[in-house]
Each structure stands twice: as structure tokens, then as C-alpha cells.
Image (tube, rainbow, N blue to C red):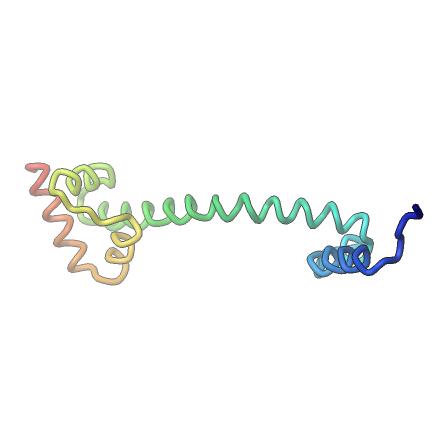
Amino acid sequence: MSRAVDGSKRKNHRKKILKLAKGYWGRRHSNYKTAKDAVAKGLTYAYRDRKDRKGDFRALWIVRINAVCRSEGMSYSRFIEGLNKAGITLNRKALAFLALEDATAFKAIVVQARQALGA
């Protein structure tokens, strides 16, 4: 049986890979052999970084909460400890949003955390 070198399935597969490689530099966007490797690597990075993005956002929220807590005279770790003792179950995303958008509400939460710590 002869080998198919110019069939529609083969051509469609190559077209799909080259379409994914659109915008790549040099031969990586036009040469199938190099585009295949570049696309495989790019998809691997995309998968990995979709997971990493969640951790990046969590770190950003923690930095924002910490900055506002420090201006209120409390460290981030003591603030979180106070929240846990007070039974306040707001996630870091919501706390960071309050810290940026609604300073008075965040100050009220800081006061509650401080009271729960007994300081």
C-alpha cells in the first residue's frame, strides 16, 4: 500500500498546525517541521500558565490586603488570624476588592479582626 503524502487529512492537519503558529517569528510560522515543535511547546506553556495565573492573582490580592492592613497598623498575618478568630469567612479576592474600592468597610473588618485578637 502506498503512502499518502498529499491527501486532504494530511493537508488539513498541517494547515491546523500552521494556523496555530500564526505570528511566530522566522520559519516557525511557515515551515511545518519547525512550527510543529513551536506549537507543541507553546501549548504546553499555555496549559502550565493557566494554572500559575491563579497563584499569581492570589499573591496580588495578598499584597493589596497587606498594604492596607499596614496602613491600619496591623500585619497581614495578624489580620488573617483575627478574621479566623472572629469567624469572618471572606476570601482574599473579596478582601482585596474591599481594600481598594470600599475603604470604610475594610476598616470595619480590620476593627473586628483586632477585637477578636483581643488587642
